[in-house]
Image (cartoon, rainbow, N blue to C red; front, top):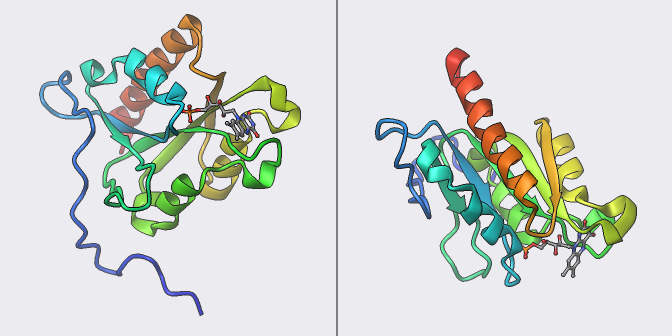
Length: 171
Ligand SMILES: Cc1cc2nc3c(=O)[nH]c(=O)nc-3n(C[C@H](O)[C@H](O)[C@H](O)COP(=O)(O)O)c2cc1C
């Protein structure tokens, strides 16, 4: 039998955002959780989005096993680069799997954005397909490497719209 990774009563302390929301009247409208490896393509893309100005908290999934585990307890979009070298079954980085294996983290995911390299053909940005299917959330956008200026514009506007529309109804 598998033990549930989180206790029934979730008394885990939420992590502090890497960058906290500054816009939105001091309150966050939602969050972006991302992973980026040592090559930092995704972290550069995230920096260019300037999401904290829009009222979006940013959390980074730790790269190294010794770092404290990330705990997120607010609605978030997940941004993830694809790894696996063309094998779609290995597309989701282990650090992201570990984060999502925590049921309390998984409960707050609302959508996924993935990146990759089109050189990998059918495995291009495959991490997004896998996470969308497993977590039953929309696959909102995909982009290559550190993205283009057009990707930055679309993702920034898309994230703002996504949370605005959600928050107009329910979180
Ligand atoms: C070892 C390795 C395997 C990769 N496998 C894939 C893949 O299967 N599909 C894909 O679309 N991109 C793949 N990529 C490209 C990465 O997703 C891309 O370089 C991404 O921008 C890395 O983001 P990061 O620098 O934030 O970690 C791979 C890159 C590396 C280094």
